[in-house]
Length: 182
Image 1: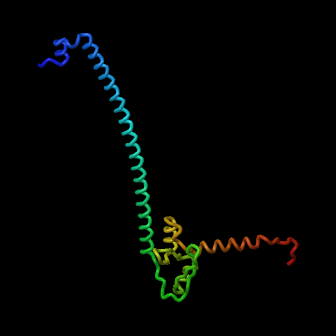
Image 2 (image 1 turned 120 degrees about the horizontal axis):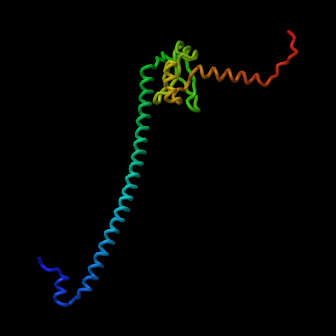
Image 3 (image 1 turned 180 degrees about the horizontal axis):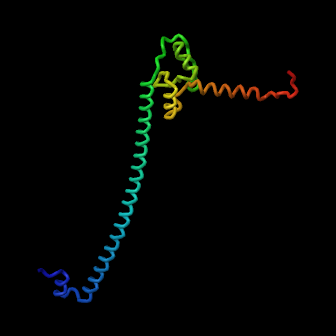
């Protein structure tokens, strides 16, 4: 093996033994500090990497939740579509207009007398299907209302209840006299 530079300088007399020892200890101290400093940097880097991983996991969880909600929404829409397509009732030739409200607008569909009678008796309901309106049996309307209540536009049983309540409220303003003689 070739002698190190330090040994060569000592032999040549350009450096003394004390200086060489002092430089050696300084070098060792610097190496220790550097080693220690690198460990701290790796800890900081590791902590930063862990934080980044946690942030990525949280973002992934959020994206997965959004995707799950979208899939659930699509599944419900498909169920509603299938319920309406399978259970829609024929409207007939359409000689009687059946009026109902869609949001704030009054709409109407033309149905035959038998269908109109069933709608007014509460056996059939009117639901919104895409851009049209369909007539379905009341149990199917209940199932659709469980999934999305905004799609069921007209139910005779709901209308009759609200009218009965209004009649009771109208008479509530008048007192009934106790001294009536019949």
